[in-house]
Length: 234
Image (cartoon, rainbow, N blue to C red):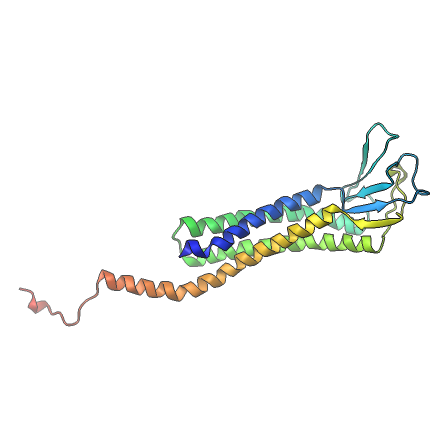
């Protein structure tokens, strides 16, 4: 009975692992914002007319420099970095740790169901912890994604220093691939969290059944027969 009740949670574990991988990919990708540069604003260095702005660096392609792809690093201590990118740097780093912790808790929870016969209270607590961590990680991912997507919609500017070779404002912006991947990761995290939290209600419904089975097994082991008297034993 326990194996059948844990199939969905095992699927949630797989989804959580995939979500964690996508979260790490989102954190490292440069295409959070896709900047389309007006020809009048482009320098002779930027020949592609497009720049990629991530949360850790800004990049563009150039045929005038030794490297085809040229990137400049952005750190949380740089004053020109807008607040939404600074918040993204912190929250996405925490999300990677939260996803790792959620996967560890989920593995422990599923292992207890499949391979142990411990008390059900401990199993329920393990599943609640895994589900809560997944949902918390999803929230950490969604906040910077929504904030940076809002900045793209409003065509927010970034006062890049001269060494970046980028104008303060693009001709137009669009949401990059990293944001889309991040939203997929967040949805998978939410699905995983809900699946693991649903396991608590499964155990609650099983408790009366398990209690009844325990009484039945006790009957099989034998009870004192009130009709039997010791004096009938010869």
